[in-house]
Image 1 (cartoon, rainbow, N blue to C red):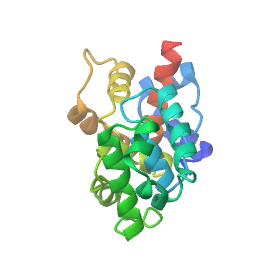
Image 2 (cartoon, rainbow, N blue to C red; image 1 turned 60 degrees about the vertical axis):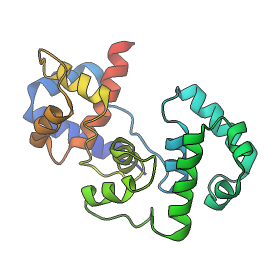
Image 3 (cartoon, rainbow, N blue to C red; image 1 turned 30 degrees about the horizontal axis):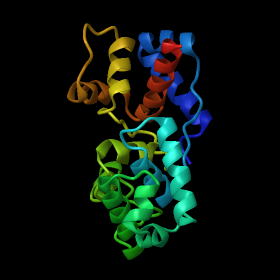
Image 4 (cartoon, rainbow, N blue to C red; image 1 turned 180 degrees about the vertical axis):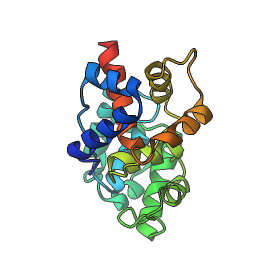
Length: 205
């Protein structure tokens, strides 16, 4: 469901009051569009399919997978698909393993994507137990699919680059430094992450 647009704007307005450099960037780039994905299995499966490939390639693989197995929202369909079928959709051996691991976790009930822990860190821990889901994927899922407003994907390269640029730092801060800096931006870090991606695209264009 993502963070509603109104909440993103409210959070960014609050951060702009705290940090004049954010206010200047917001005036320059404007408010970002909300980033919204569906809650549940299919969004995490798409995340696995799209790992380490371009957006265009990920969409092509997803289309092939849908055509090959039918209803991708049903984990049983993916679990039942042969190696040949999944390979034909463009999945590597590693991604096949990840997709099946996710399907198994959902089918057996070890992972209930509609009842994740209320604590963000506890929910991240539940997600990263799935083979192929790292911290970044878990954080982005919680931000875009659950609309958790204080999730902060500090390991994201664009987030690191843009925090450095927004604060006029002499060099790109690493993940640890970005997490330290962001403590002052609670509980609005999710909106700021969305803004960093928006600002990056705006500055590139």
